[in-house]
Length: 421
Ligand SMILES: Cc1cc2nc3c(=O)[nH]c(=O)nc-3n(C[C@H](O)[C@H](O)[C@H](O)COP(=O)(O)OP(=O)(O)OC[C@H]3O[C@@H](n4cnc5c(N)ncnc54)[C@H](O)[C@@H]3O)c2cc1C
Image (cartoon, rainbow, N blue to C red; front, side, top):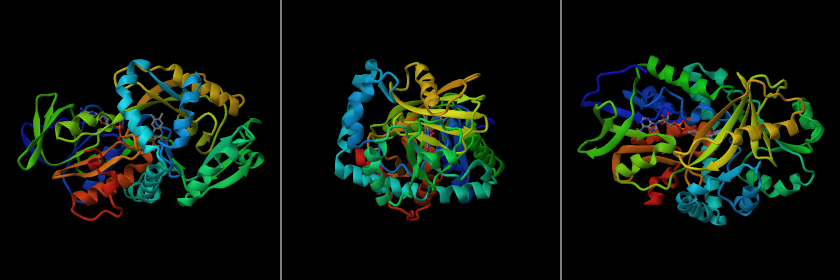
């Protein structure tokens, strides 16, 4: 990113955070004719957006906070290879978030979250079509659907109520027998007992390149980028003042906070409480996997995903509650290889690399979107949990509408930070 002289300068529109969400918002505002400055302490795409599973998971409209999750927590925690772990030293800090998570799992709340997630996800692919079409990046979205596979013969039956619920929200799903799944993905071994095909989902073969190319497009269009760390925000008259670690200060006439898992303190500094925490996740990248998939493949029993990427096969998933400071536990990435071996005989991990990312998560599984209550200068776009890649382009369109004083295509009040005040 290029440096610029920003000392006490006024900027019309500033977006903080150059992950997939912030970059999409900055690009969208610029596309609409605004002069936009994008600030990040790192180069674009080095946060959570770097290493996700690349799945435009439009089918995921059931919030993680639901009764099935709550009931399975004890079993999940006892499984050393399981998809959930809590660092016990962090447990007391996670407790308020966990209590809200449990409340969000009440049936009425789940139904509401399903509707709101569907409202975003149902518009996700079309908004990416617009974004990638105008930036010349259509090669970064592959529309080949996604699969969920079952290994146990009773899994289809156990998953039926969820399938019915998703169908009720308009998600297209086809049930497939084992041989039909293997016809689509011949690398799969005999462990597969059946599964589901989701035709209206897509994937990117390089989520990091997606962010960097969008940022490049933003810069080529005249967008300004600053590589600096935001150390404080303050309400001023007619602007929000931004203090940077370089000692510089800029005044934003309109500000969008899109700093993913690091957004809580910024909201607090401007007077808003938000129970944001992070669900840490891991990936294992296999450059020489020795077997190929052609679309994202989710394991129902093992709760992880395998996605074909430009640089190999990516195994991703797991949730670890341990906050923003604790060292990564890369054993959780290595676990993914053991799981993949059960599905893909002959898979190899020569040259594998491991990564951890911080999913920004609210207990009700909904992001915080839109103009701040009683402060039209300020907007939020964070907390997209497991779906930040999926929802970034539609988030950008909806937030830009509000910033321009237009009514967004969907009602943003369920996503407002007001729900936590
Ligand atoms: C293992 C894993 C798999 C996933 N798979 C998928 C998937 O398949 N599909 C999907 O839709 N989602 C997936 N996700 C979730 C998705 O990656 C996130 O929701 C998304 O990346 C969040 O994007 P973001 O832009 O909000 O945050 P980030 O990408 O984390 O960006 C936030 C930015 O803010 C910057 N920042 C923070 N503090 C400051 C500061 N003080 N000053 C300046 N800059 C600052 C950071 O440097 C960072 O660049 C996955 C996540 C994980 C961990």
